[in-house]
Length: 353
Image (cartoon, rainbow, N blue to C red):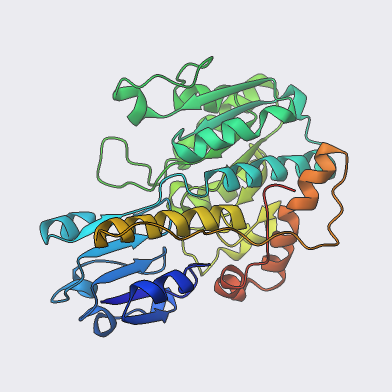
């Protein structure tokens, strides 16, 4: 049994050593066709493109990505060649919720964002969007609007107490717009450049008509969901007052102008809490064990907080003690060429004290 695994999937090595006769751990970008030719199982993250070029002629029977998103998997090719595949839906959703909530807390503290008067629009209400919805009520938002055309078209009901809103309504009424969609291209509900020039033009018109300041725009989905050049123009005309950017169109090569101007700019780590990572590793191992017809008897837990951690009794202060996104932002702004290193050597971050 040979398993090839991205060496940045945390807490997984001891379990794989008991499952594999031959275990190969490599950086995701360096996994090659030669590595997988005689492999049975391939475990990846977003940096490994799993397609014909990588897998043609290999004996790989299972590909698992330890991530929510799976646009780096050519699922059509995998299925047509009898290769099973799986992702880890919802594994780090609450971590992204923490990222969004705490970014808004810092906007309130540093830039005077009046959260209690604000309407938030959540675009994409799957596992992550739902976790964001559950994370932000403590902020005291005035209203929350939800947009998810695929779920609405499928006849799915929104979370209790909400109705589905059009993207146009969110553009016209929301003061905070946060994106949590997958990146899809050739479909009726394509999300590539969902926030494009037309989106921002309508946003500018709506803000002027209402006499309101610019919005807060958050992209913790995929880089291609937001047209970054159009976003910069919207920041120039004031229709976007603050940007929080975790995912980038050309990552790891960043739009340096947007990097400088974003209030929070981070290296695709919104979901990188230790809790979220442990969830992803646990789900990955569950899928591997199911494939191998053996029990899942591995206890995957994140590391504890340092012994000297002293939790504040103030809820907002405690939230930022556990995770302050401005620290990640400062590191990336100081050294943008270290995008991948900052992801790979990410410090301990917990969601709970």
